[in-house]
Amino acid sequence: MPGFSTRSRRLILLVSTAGLCVGGVALADEVSGGVPSNAELHRMILELQGRQKRLEQEAEAARSEAAAAKAELARAQQRLQDVSDATPDVSAGPAADTGFIVSAEALYWDVSRSGLDYVMTDANGGSDPLLGDIKRLNPDWNAGFRGDVGYRAGNGLDVLVRGMFFGTEAGDSETDLGDYLSPTRFYIPEAEAEMRNAEFATSEYDLDLWMIDLESGYWFQTLANLRLRPFAAFRYASIEQDISSMYCEDPACELGNVEVDIVDQGVDWWGAGLMLGVDGDWNFWRGFSLFGRGAVGVLGGRYESSFSYYDGYEEEQMIDADDDDTLFTPVVEAKLGVGYKIVDAERFELDFQTGYEFMGFLNSPDFLAFDGSDEFVGVESGDVNLMFHGAFFRLSGRF
Image: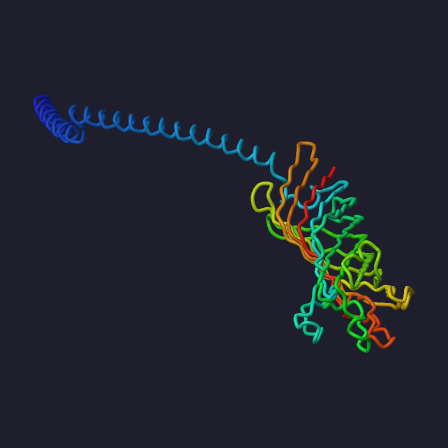
């Protein structure tokens, strides 16, 4: 160092070194105060190891839950597939029902109508036959059949032809040895009582209904499991009715050895026209469904009615007359039932249905009637309503 002696320079160096040593010690003490101790480091390591163990346990539990959820999902998918194999795909819409349609139905019906009286029993000993009880024929429940064949396109439109037949009959007889039976199929007010009264009366009624429909409809999806089918049909229907009644003054008249009065009446009607309606099908559980149908229409056509009276006492045909005319007949029908549908892997479909239905021909032609004055009461619209009702059992297939 210039300007300082050797001794002075040594003293300055010694002082500087001592200062540096003191500052270094202080700095070391300050630095050593921010470093964790061994105990603290050991505690931190234990906490981290515990946290890691808990995370590993939670991860293992999550993996177990994920595996269980995966297994449950697989079981649910398998159950869904099993149900789908046994359940028709109603949500797929009408395209799933494409193919030819064939069905056959068994009917068990009854018919209700007025005007089937045949005799009046006199409870007053012949004093006034008009005060007696009227006996009527009650048609039997009987079997019929119905079937159709058609085709359903992928867009939901279908066309089919349906045929139907139903027939029924009724019979009854009445005996009164007091000669107090009064015929109701004809009445002659000016005749003497012994000419209009009888001891034995019997009557038989027969009805045949034939029907053919050419029908087209369109299925469309409304809700998840509900489908509707508006339709229109051209219908031809024919109804044939006959009633034959026999009256005599002796129950032995059935053997043919006494005088017999015979009244034969018939009325044949046919009509054709347009029917409009809607079908509905609700699949409420697997292959089971609730279905309904309703339709209305008017059929225009003609009728032919005949009346003949054979007088057994005179042994001659006293009356033989007929009548015919045009007639428009309203028709209403409704049905309700349940069904079960089976679909196999090849999409062949079987459908079983059963239920109850009603069909009414309103203002149908009635029988001609003799009023006792050589005049006939003609057939008029509204004379009688024919009401058919009963059960049906239907099996249909689509392929």
